[in-house]
Image (spheres, rainbow, N blue to C red):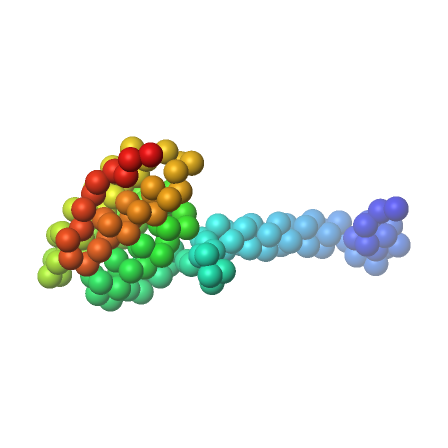
Length: 139
């Protein structure tokens, strides 16, 4: 059995152009939904974390908290974080934050992807407000 669009087309109720337009718009909607889903991550508390939170963070500390939430769930977006951190460079504490993000990026490369506890420990230590340390945890 064919689709509804095929049935309407065979009955002469719609034209091929309308069917093609409908199929194209359906593909665009699916692509948009897919893009939205890719930008959302889920925390352990099952609340969605969105990388766009970094755009609305107005202070260095708010940005640091948002980065921690995002990287605890999905560490592969560190390059996006580094792109967004540079807007704080002229604010107090901004240069240190930029430096910290590069240190986090370099440290995450050294920790295996399977070592989730080690990554979490590294991120929590590295993104503390004061006394940040970038020690790679022993496995």
